[in-house]
Image (cartoon, rainbow, N blue to C red; front, side, top):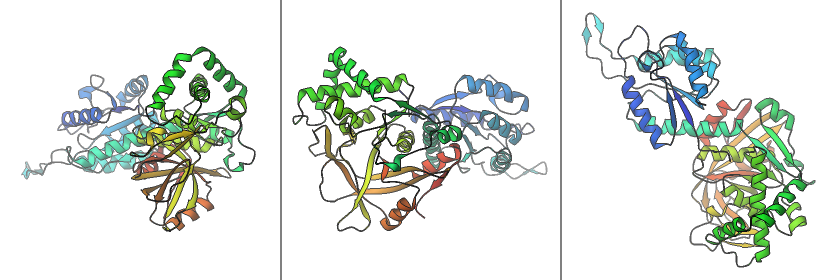
Length: 458
């Protein structure tokens, strides 16, 4: 199964060849601390180049080879003094990966020594040069302001960058399992498979209902213990008393069988037909099944929404798996709060999101619970006549009337603006949501996704 959290960072600190003073050791020590705290695998150039620094253009080829052999997902080029902007730009161009640019603030100058100002490193000066060089080489990059090495600005910037890398990686690595066909009425979920492949390298893998049904039937016959364990795990989290044992067994078999088929096809996310396929073959709803699969790290969207599935993967990457996303309809305005809206669906929200203190249950194969409030980020990918956009916005959970299925009422700063943005599009009534604030992270990740434009409420 795809790991939305995993990130391997190649670190190539740089110094100007004519400046001997540098603070590489302090930088590497701090980066190792941050990598350990935020669960990032580091690949350094220690022992590979002189002083473990990027100084000479002649070292670029072996650094690139070293980074590629270690499957780095991004490159960090901290400046240990002014830095070598040409070498940095050529290395990053050759790698074709997200780039993080930063360098620590210099200590105060000590005065005039031998008619020259005694500045330690001139890091900031070099950052200007490297930024321009990267632009000249057409390399997108993320910049953290010149700050002290122990500054919280560096720590937050590092964490945000890693999340952006994981979000972009989830997008570029997306392989969507299309489970059967879309409901014929849903024109809104149509997508252009050829464009997705040509523009972004994203593959859509159609999986026939016959293959899925056979996998589920095989699971029912041959994996009784796994089915029982799955149901027991669910029963610890939600009330299953309204469900017949036979239906629960079929639901558990569906989760196990569908996930196995998706993994065999190398898929990272799924877009599922949820109206007829499981109902006709097994007499069960797809709703709770989709939520359970999402809880296991394989996000599934309703009504065979392929662009929605890609967006859910991006959201999973932005959270690095720390918060499970949910897939919702934007349905009705709040009856008394003009800036609030109902995010709802008939029962596919992950059970891990159920509001504490409630009584989550499953009825008719559909989840019945309100989810936790707090800060939530909403994401939707859109396409119109070959132009792709990604909308992201932040909302807050709020109180509202109870309803069936899965839901949460959310409040915005100005719902009419949101409504106009989403209706005039190119968006639909489906959105992916996740707890936390990720708008800036998603917009930064778009630097590394290709020809897709950031969209937000102005």
